[in-house]
Length: 78
Image (tube, rainbow, N blue to C red; front, side):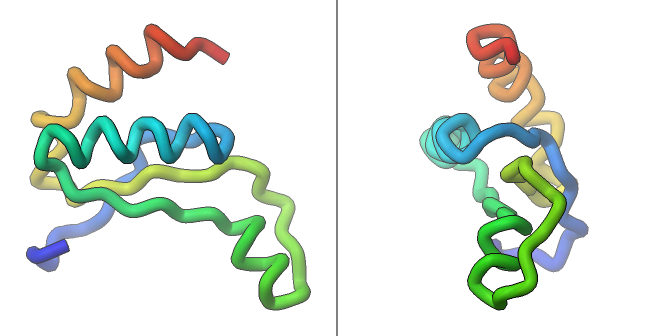
């Protein structure tokens, strides 16, 4: 990500959902990041109680990302 804006969580779900949304956001020109605390903990050998994979974007992109996220959630209810 180019700017030093604060990262905010816009979605939390399973690995497949998070990466699908990531690709949709990137197709719209919105940079994002995946945060998987469980996988990171497993790599370090300490585990984690977090089971969700999180999608983070820069706060400045929130308004542009909002309709994409809302449409994604509507198509992918839990």
